[in-house]
Image 1 (cartoon, one colour):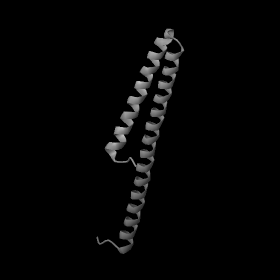
Image 2 (cartoon, rainbow, N blue to C red; image 1 turned 180 degrees about the vertical axis):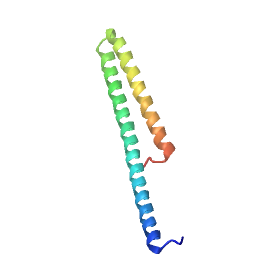
Image 3 (cartoon, one colour; image 1 turned 120 degrees about the vertical axis):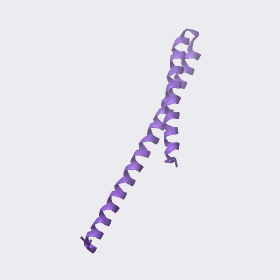
Length: 93
């Protein structure tokens, strides 16, 4: 059965709407990954600051400082993972 011009036009409009939805979804997803990376980097920075303060306060706080540095390392690692994911997708601007 031959396709009418109206059928082709309707199919083209549907395809265009799908492309637009997919593009918006990709943009939203990239923004979410960037936000996660920023959040983890800031958390790592706060943990490092807390560790410095605990270490400077007294030698008895060495355990606390070590724990906070471990937390900072974890957050930094999470941020690196988020950054690698963004870079791999090519979404970083």
